[in-house]
Each structure stands twice: as C-alpha cells, then as structure tokens.
Length: 189
Image 1: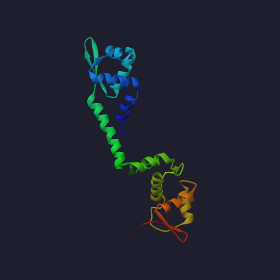
Image 2: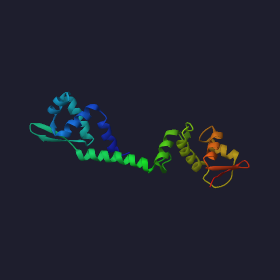
Image 3: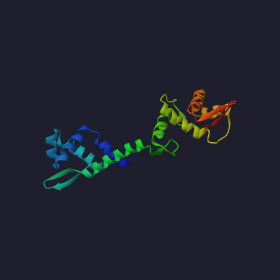
Image 4: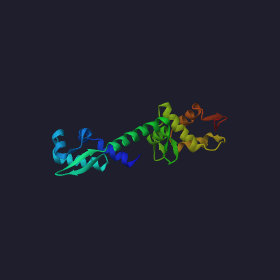
C-alpha cells in the first residue's frame, strides 16, 4: 500500500484531527480560531495541525500576525480516489503479491497471508471459498508437474504445509483439482 496514503489515513484516525478538518472545510483559520471553535487548547491544535500538515492534508500560510491553516482539498480527494481504487481492485480480483512474492488474485493473496505462517498452514479454512484459494496454492506448489504421484509422495509434499494430509488430499479431490486412481494421484483436467 502507498506510504503517503497510510500517512494520510493515520493522520485522519483521530477524532480531534477530524474535527479540525471539518472546521477547515468551511474556510481557512488561524490556530486561535480553531482552538476556540474546537474547544482544544492552542498547543493541542498546533500539534494536530502539524500532524495533518506532515500528511499533506493541511497547508499553512503566514498572514500577519497569524499563520492561517487551510485544507488541501485536492489531497483529500486523492486519498478518496486511492481508497476507491483499493476497493475496486479487491472487487475486480486484481493481482497482489502472494507470500512468495508472486502475483496472485487479490482474494487469494489475502487468504494466503491470513492462513500461512513461515510457509506452513496455521489451519485449513472452514469456509469453502478460502479453502479453494489454499488448495489452488498447494496444487501449484506441490504438484506442478502433470504426472502420477504415489500416495506416499502426496503425503510428504502436503506434509510440508500441514500435518492433516488426509483432509488436504480429500479436499483436493472434492474440489476437482486432483483425481485418484489405483492409489495414485494426478492433477485433474
């Protein structure tokens, strides 16, 4: 995620700063005006304004005898567009880096990041859609070659990711990702 977007979101993740942004949305104001309107001390207002300014959401302009602060509306609109873009990317299934750095559909990458720790499954997802993402990952990692795999080898390969190899074998077959015949497993399709 973009570091500038994260900085802006962190700056906005405070009720007092949000109140100041709301006040500045009406017009530019000096610290004293903001303090009176918000009920905060001038020192607290300055602290929050510096945080908003560092995130690029507010700008200061010297107006003798005060410094006037104004909202950077274009930056707020940019933050809004970035957030909307993240939502669209998630819905569209755009690609994100997976645990090994390879590009994966966004949903799969999120699931893998949630269920893999140090390259091993912490648990097998109960939810079908999440389990499918895990199974696709395991299929690509353990059974890349289109050949017959004896059950012993299947168990060894799946055992590198989780101790419940019997469930993983069964899920791979039920999902239609692998087929079993005569004690051997093969990629389906």
